[in-house]
Amino acid sequence: MTSCLDVTKNMLDQPMEIRTDRSLNFSEARALADHEANRIDGDPMLLAWFDRSARRFSPDVICCDTSKPTWLVYAEKRGGTISVDINDEDYVFIYRPGM
Image (cartoon, rainbow, N blue to C red; front, top):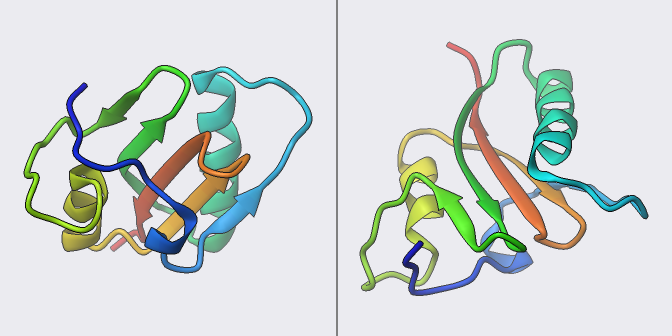
């Protein structure tokens, strides 16, 4: 993983925040995020995600001349308006509403 910036809450546009005392793995976090995104829109498409503990994100796109992480810019430019923030950016998932 290569990235210029870490994601911070102020970079996310009105994120749905989920907090849990449980230690989550990526699959569990994604299931929580999918559930929340489906409550907002019946057919959301996952465009990008971030996993702080594993230091991974997708898509793995790089462009250092930006004020946001490039995976986040990628999702926003493609209609990603649903953001789910789990445990203060431990995991972040960005979805596009269904068409």
